[in-house]
Amino acid sequence: MSAIDRMAVGGERGHWGNAVSCLNLSFPGTRYIWFRNALSGRKIITVPVFFDYGELDAALLHEDAEEVTLPPVLIRGLVQHIKAQGLVGDGPRYDRLVKMQSIGGPLLGPVLTEAKSILSDKLCVTYSSTQTGIISRLEGDAIDSHPTSVGKPLPHYHIRIVDDEGCPLPNNQVGHIEAQVNGNAARPGDRGYLDDEGYLHVVGRVQEYFCRNGISFNAPDLENRIQDVTGAALCCVISIPSEAGDEDQIVAVIEAEPSHISEVKTRLRAHLSPLTRPDKIVLMRVLPKTSGLKIARAQLGQMIEETPEVCHAI
Image 1 (tube, rainbow, N blue to C red):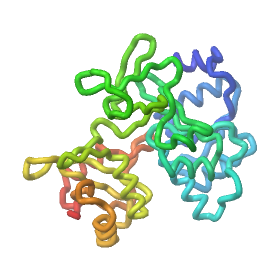
Image 2: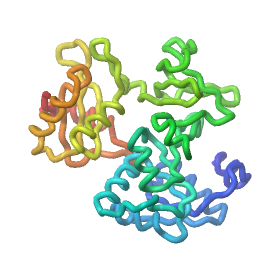
Image 3: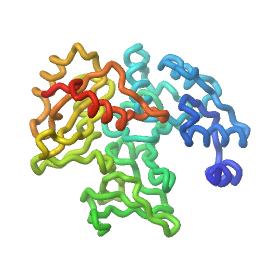
Image 4: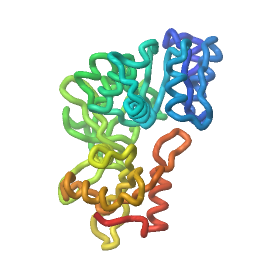
């Protein structure tokens, strides 16, 4: 409510557009957009509670649509839908939008640049946390020049990268992201680094950062690699305690037809290094989601703990 007072009533952020809304109202960001537009007299263009990508596409093409905020999973799915339907044109499909915002997770690299080209050249990536609000934003030409970053921190933020003891780390060295604003410091729970140009790079959640035989890597990178190799729409990589009591085992839960297990195993063995390849995989037709449309990692971890037989060794 304080954000609404500052931004919608006080006009801190300027013009607000008619917004396409398809996210669950249990998500605070969705409620904010609804309240904000109600107070400022702007429209909300909705889709059905259980919508498909055709209905989302139609809403974004609505003559009154001006902006939309979507999680990366929906942006990736929308790109796949448009390509599958043969709707890719010479320019961005939603050229009337003044803002298309990705928020709530990583949308990086070729996936990001492709989305900007196919969906909207007004696409931006926003990095935020519940403790501090919006920390950084990547948009415009910076998407093409720095597609693996989440942009430069906003002017009123001071970002530090610190080690486990809270000591500052130099540029290009991975550590805990710490955001300082108005004299208060908070850690969003992500690991990342600042490059020499001041762009912030997020490499994964603290609990999603793995080390095997001295080789460090993070879950989002491995998830993207598995998706590329297998053609799966979604993948979630989690760690579970090893039965032998040594290093944790890495399990990849892949959204794919369970009967394709042999083909998926063959592709992973052929294209992934043994040092980063998951120990086990689970194939599910649909991965469970939270109310905010993120993959329900905790639910998957509990499922694997309770029914380990669903896992298949690589």
